[in-house]
Amino acid sequence: MPFIFALLVALGVFIGRNFMAGPSGGGNNPLMIYPQASNKLDGIMTLIEDEYVDTVNRQSIEERIIPEILKDLDPHSVYIPAKDLNKVNEELQGNFGGIGVQFSMQNDTVMVIQVIQGGPSEKVGILPGDRIVAVNDSIIAGKSIATTDVMKQLRGEMGTDVKVGVLRRPNKDLIDFNITRGNIPIYSVEVSYMVNETTGYIKVDKFAQNTYQEFLTALAKLKANNCQELIIDFRGNSGGLLDVAIRLCNEFLPAKDLIVYTEGKAHKRQNVHANGAGTCQDTKVIVLIDEFSASASEIFAGAIQDNDRGVVIGRRSFGKGLVQQQIPLSDGSALRLTIARYHTPSGRCIQKSYENGSSDYYEDIYNRYAQGEFFNQDSIEFNDSLKYTTKNGRTVYGGGGIMPDVFVARDTSMMTDYFYKLRVNGIIYRYALQYTDNNRASMEQFTSAESIGAYLDKENILAGFLNFAKDKGVSFNQKDYNLSKELIEIELKAYIARNLIDNEGFYPMLHQVDEVFKEAVEEALKTES
Image (cartoon, rainbow, N blue to C red; front, side):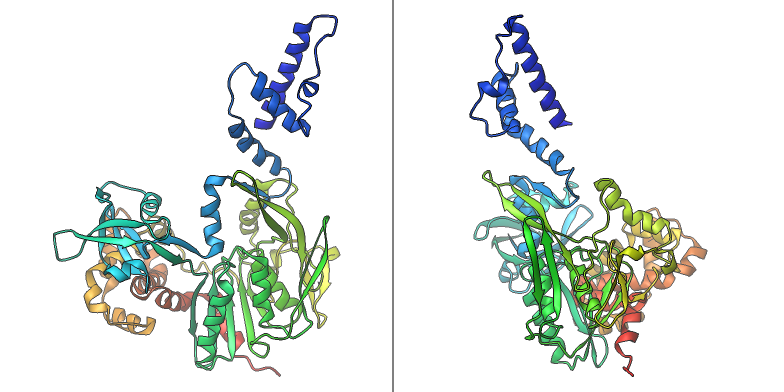
């Protein structure tokens, strides 16, 4: 619409000029008036800026027009305004300037959940459970301040100072800390741990600049504990940097195995092969994916599957097979432009259709759910024209994501209306936070999910939780509770464990009711015949 509006304005100026010139046709062509314009769009914008009846903001118009132009390309070609570029890049850069705490809003007050080891806050003495009530002498507690606004005040350029006022139980007086902001890492490998004596597990959240090194560190820890089978979890991983995905694949494939190839109008086909230097070429590997695994996650899963190197378990992935290049612009903004398609080793392009626009493209996930794809593998139809074969001759399909070797339906057996109300209102998370805060002194001795679980098994946490939920407006439903009880209890324990020891406690708890994870463990322990 902004683009159409600009054209109509230009047309009006053109007609007005010719009308004022009279029947003799003495008017001038607008683009002839501005011969310095290198193209029609630039000419129109210059004409509007100089001749329009009112003053216009050219930059503001261009900021609205550019996204409209990109909408006609593909859903992943996007314009990033200069004001948003740093924030967008932080996730892939793997760091930002801050004070080094994880926090949550509890009763309109910032409560510190975790203090990053070696970070600025730990160095000055900030502790888990502290309440940050003031920043730079401005009170932020009790004002319903948004989490994003708190982050803006606490984050900043590395080396700059921020003063925080902290309330620490049982003291009633504020403790002032002057904190020098430092380099705070954003971890993309969320957790790694040994599931049993020989099976390791790694959860990768995204493919950022630091992901490969984090992955190697996690691998080294697991291999030191006799890891012989490895489960790599890409569920919910929307992708990231292509070269990082290639480096991770290289750890598992023998020399000369094709990892991926890319090809575009202005970019000739480029094959990427394993170099044979990978450290896990003999390690059994299982890859977990779901409907939100995309891009780089699909490159990894496709390389493992097409080379018959391991087993892919879960549900059909998102289906993003386009490669973007980020191009900086002169004003500090950037354009992420799709320049190529990537293909898995068998030749598959797993990009799903985007002919009907971005809205339908992203709603495809909801359509899959409505059609029963999350629950029944037979509901998924593949076009025979998109049939390919793996290295060992197995049939795989392109045209819309990676279909796992082992399908695991979404488990809804414990999902009830009562549970959904608890989750939507954040009751489980909020009670876990309150419980941790009230019992931190007696629980801080525990350093593993097993020890935390053993302690909580002796406590009647559900009784207090049900009263808490009722006080927060969620009415008790006995029938639903009986069905959801196990899931509620596991999630409570998981959040409490996360509050104490971060993801090292969270994921091992949740995996007790994770059917995809359980299937992966069974697959890992199978002996080859």
